[in-house]
Length: 182
Image 1 (tube, rainbow, N blue to C red):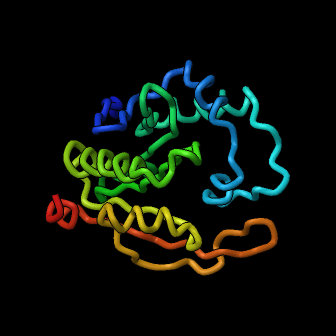
Image 2 (spheres, rainbow, N blue to C red; image 1 turned 120 degrees about the vertical axis):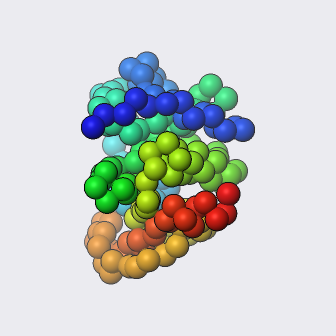
């Protein structure tokens, strides 16, 4: 089942469908070691982020049925997706990536998540949205808690970064929980 990707507008953030011209914006964001680490990548010896990398990223997001470009002040900041949409169980998994370290900690991620949850529980009428986050990513975990996500479990040593194992935290929010806080 395909869905037309609607624009979702917040006070400071606009979520919009991807377009091929986003290659330049993604290339300009580059690749921060801090952000690569927060996604579970190894920040040691990162190769330069090139135009082919940016083009592949944009093409992958264009092909995704529920993926938005995160736009702030007319500039690309990242992506937000609902992965694994399961209509039978009425659920999906949230994934969000903001790629400019200077924009973190300003509440933009929270605004993105609130827009996505409003769409998920309103328009899509989902019952549940969940996510995975590395246990050391405290900034993201605080944001998810502020958006109503509850820690549901931990997968021990499920992610290896370099030679070190890290836990994943599983978090979720149900439609009734979301509606009780809005």
